[in-house]
Length: 430
Ligand SMILES: NC(=O)N[C@@H](CC(=O)O)C(=O)O
Ligand SMILES: [Zn+2]
Ligand SMILES: [Zn+2]
Image (tube, rainbow, N blue to C red; front, side, top):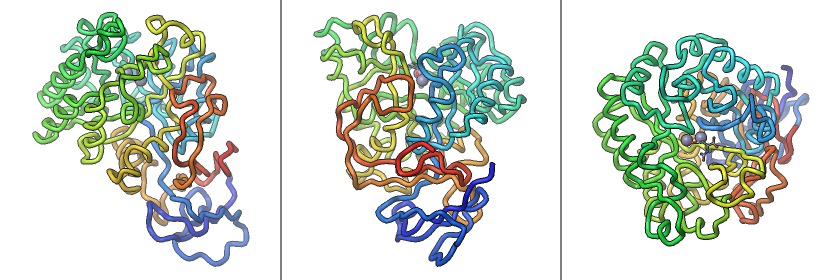
């Protein structure tokens, strides 16, 4: 696609001294003092931070099957508004993304939309049923070039299947992304297990149900010499297990979600299912451990777990409501609030955890690169100085289940460029 040349003036690349950026023919054509570029559209970058296009390793797009909740198009528009230039689309669609045909369909829809690259995640087991391995090799060899495999929404709880999946993906340098939830320990679980779940009369989801699977999978990954990625780490104990695995040199990576960096289980006391998510919101000590783990690199990345649900699946009593919350359009603001503003992460650190590292883990070759001459022009312009009140109705998502409605958050995505083409300008979708 031919895109106009853009000259971004006086912008701070990753928090550095203000400079100019020329985006031409899909690449960063020049960085530095740029005096003239007659053919360029000028974007005033004063006060803005330029970051590499964000890469999400964990997004639910709901197409095929639940197009009432989200489509590839609506979800990638929300992604662009959040500063993302690539997302990994989770496999728990209807039908499940467990064949080359389905992953190619999702990949193609992403290309047609043009808002954000879509890298489909392949299911580990047929139908997410946890019984037989899906055709991992065929998905890897397909046009979608799948490298991340996950039964997310479900845990691959059978240790033999998990071992086989870890062994199988080595052939094409893939990774198994585990939704760590021991099923027997979480039957009927509704919220974090603790004093509060007892008081509220909601069945508890204990930390050990997450930690036991993470510990097992780290051991399995080490045993077969494969790559493991841990989805949505939510407890202090999980951070500790991942830290130990890394100290042993095992090939384990982990993600934290914005909501687990900000919100705690006390919100369940509202009985408002907007706060119902899997894994559940945990305690303040867990939030603190996640932030510290993300700061020191134990937790490699931030992933949104953007999980759209239509109002009929959320506007009901807590026990009947679906698990999950929106995340793409607020992720960067929450990372600013919880990590950058308190001094736990620099903008350089944000680029690592929201762009470079997720692209590396997902083996996305053409994204997650520093903003230097010759690099693909995947760039976000972000204004960290403003504050805004989140309005659920303003989302580009087809669903409205943001837990931040009415909350004031810092920062705003001003522009997003995908290979030099603006997907967002002046804060508006192009
Ligand atoms: N996170 C959630 O609460 N829900 C996700 C599934 C998942 O990520 O496990 C969904 O698909 O809705
Ligand atoms: Zn999950
Ligand atoms: Zn998920």
